[in-house]
Image (tube, rainbow, N blue to C red):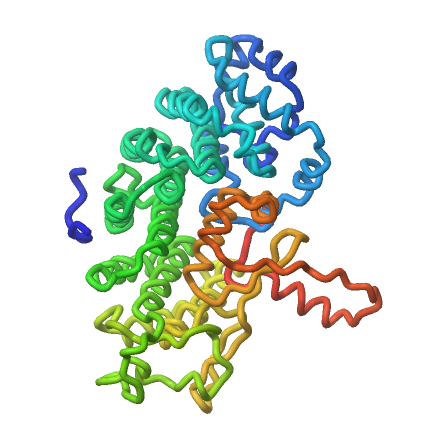
Length: 485
């Protein structure tokens, strides 16, 4: 990987968040699309307010349980028996650019996103991937409106994650990089960063491409967005941190890059935005996790940190409930040279009580960084819910993380790479994640080999309220999500 700390300083208006989250749910036929494309020039040239710009993306940096699960629209789409025909009509409208307007393209892109989010559409569109890719690229390049461009970026992400077409990265990367660097809209920059990460992961990026893009993303983080002319913008920095961590889950050997990467990530722990702090903290936990790998036959046993890779100076896992089921993990290298200093910083965030921080952000910081600190202290421990330290024994305890997926089921997440991948997949697929999982989308199943267990429906309606509250509290353990969408 190129020098991660190199100097990089040389280097319209949209609809509201509430409206955008509908993602074209009102469009049901090609006739409606055709009518939209014939709107008057007043509608075609429609611009959005600056106030609405920052809140457009429903899958922006502050991922919300509501926008991800989207239960209402999921149920409507599950009852949409005509979705295949609607998708074909939407695809025709997308490709018929000559007779379209800005507003018409916005509506057809929104409809495409809705359909390909809630349904696994690979069979229906695989023969049209080059044409759809070309249409999305034209809208991204033209940047006629913020809404059209961001929806085109969303559509491109969904195309990459549903079609397993490994030509997408090569075809889209130069344009996405240009949008990140040169767009005049912060919203577009952040959306393009997410799109670049998704296309690299699922659109055919190789190992060298992963390293190049991770270096590019870390430059954005190290410069607080200045390298892409987004100075101190939390949405772009958070997007870069999230996509950097997502790509890092794919790489096995990170020994040479770990030290410099963690130093850059540590700098972001002092950010004034909780989304930036949490994204940086999760990547730090991931890098510590990567410093341990499965024990091999020729590994020595019975040594401590000075000679034995199995013990790092902290309490043995044998003294408490194991937090990682599977092969024994062995330390291979030091993730960072000054772990005690890092732990102090993480502990400060896990117990922060500043009045300048909102109650919601404070709770989110506490729960996230308690778990992150636990992993840094002993990288065998993955993400945990309600983690704490017994002050008498100095032992860590908590519940393993269980993530509820809609009303469909739940996943048990015991490693940070699984948690980061799950968040990235759900950011793209939102409420359609379970449908893609159960319909066998390879992008989901191969990148996240975690079994989803079906949720049991309580038959006893008179069950104690305390038990119901406990189940509710454990649904989402690691991050406090916004209900504002």
